Image (cartoon, rainbow, N blue to C red; front, side):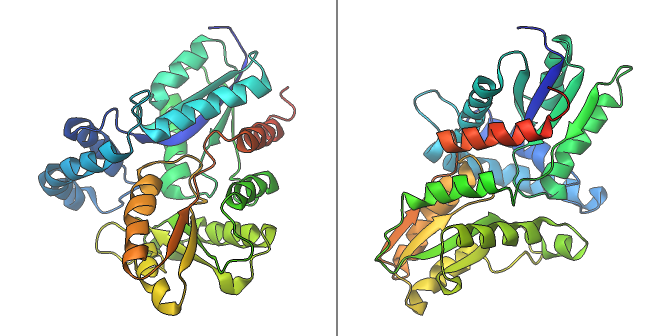
Length: 326
């Protein structure tokens, strides 16, 4: 691997190594042990996690992962597309930079990738989270892990953390382009923008995530010239008994047909790569619920993935964050 003084670390959430009970259990144990993700006091949460959740959930989750696992390369969709995004950005920015990706949970881990980047001579590091909207549970957790890694180092490179790109016009345009492929201008299509949810308490305590999701949805509707009565924002993936952000995606999908909405386009703007939450929760289970409730047509728009327009947008957004370094 060539030496380079500038490195770009694309940071994604993570994925199990395989669609098996054992691999999913390892992944969930790391993910759900993070106090940024579940901030219940450790003395209360850890016995629940290890005594109940990690005994029951891995087998069910593994069965869902098997439904979306890629057969062509035996990789999860999230890993595959994140890898392709890194390759695409490298082709745009040039091989004189270290363009790498790491997973907050699972492999390749942050410590492993940073070790390799430093060994290759990286002296200036841009950390670029692939979460368009900032949340303490995602971007915040990743920055915690990177800070923890360097807390043990005698020599630390110059580090920049990229700003969230939820309102960046390049990102909005890429999303709009993806959606246009599924538009039927003369039909009565309704648009549902679904984002991963959070406990409502997080927003009440100052997490900007929900506000940034709403901004993304508004900008996207404006870019597509969708009247406000033809779109709605919802939040998915509720977990636990605490109140989460509303309206809930699953309940909305069941409700829309009773409102006379029969033709639906569903978009997941908070995910830049398809994963279990988009491919199974929305494209399979969510679509099935909508149709069973009386819906007639449901198009689930693929995530940005490795589409040329998004790779180009990602490269340009990264260049902006590198100003003054190259």
